[in-house]
Length: 417
Image (cartoon, rainbow, N blue to C red; front, top):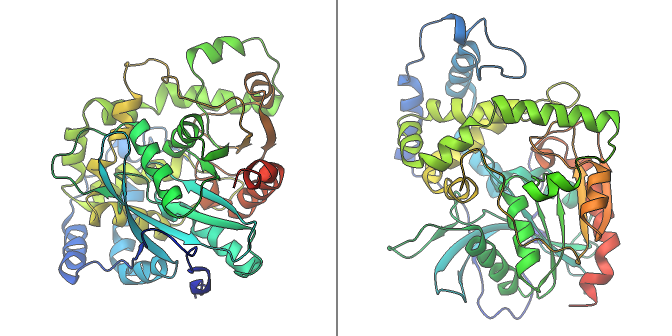
């Protein structure tokens, strides 16, 4: 049974524009279409490369057996209305924000837990692809169990990042989004909620957004990441630094992923129209493409693997919101040069920075590297389990890190509020 978090749904007083309460309800015809398409989906006949070549780390991607079983389980045992009701148990809103830079208007969706404490620290949690705001429901649940609105030390804002799922732009004549505009929209969301001093946390695409928010906007006072891609200059700067055996093992895995597991990103970045059209032909096709990442990027050895219920709830959200096609903008921005380094982000090297390293990650930051590159590093912790979807798979460990980081940066945030 879902925890009743409605008491945390009281927004700060005196907001210039009140956000609109939001509850998701997918029309019955769309739900019927989803399950009809799942039922009619054709899965290829068994062959060597979709059966015998599968390994736990997804050497050749998802196997035929996994996909066939997942399809049948989705049909027989997973009820979208139950998933929808669970999502709606978290307080949610929508708020329109206008970019000061170019006047674009975003209709941003967010979930949130709000405190009655005068010194509560505002923090926004930012997801990536193929995730969604649902990555943080475990963290929100833990906070709801641990605190009351009177004792919660934080204001927690969990948006659907711009152009993902439930966050869209309202103009008909959209232009291609970039990281600077998306970060500006999220900063305006926090300002619109009455926060002129806050902390940003992110992984995956959210890591780039959090960096950019802290680098470009005075209101963002500190940032915490659980994924980090080095630029070419940074890679050269840390090339001769010593790392621990555990860190070297993570780096070896990262290098292997870069060689064998990153082709999807080039497809997203260079042929977004093709892959979007292909995957929107059937939800089982989308499940194969997205499910591969939820499996491969998770710790399936020490941590509890992500359930099919969790994976299909993510896929369904993308399906019902036509979110896949819009989610490709981040890869267009980040894949400016084929096979090249990640472009520089406007990262702050003065505002407090924290990093959590989880065991299975597609990009990592050893502690010696973090200390060398970031004179503003105030928190670092490494874990021997957990993966790319750290908040989703290991919410307790993730929240422990966040609370320690927030305790360290509280003077920087509250002094500016």
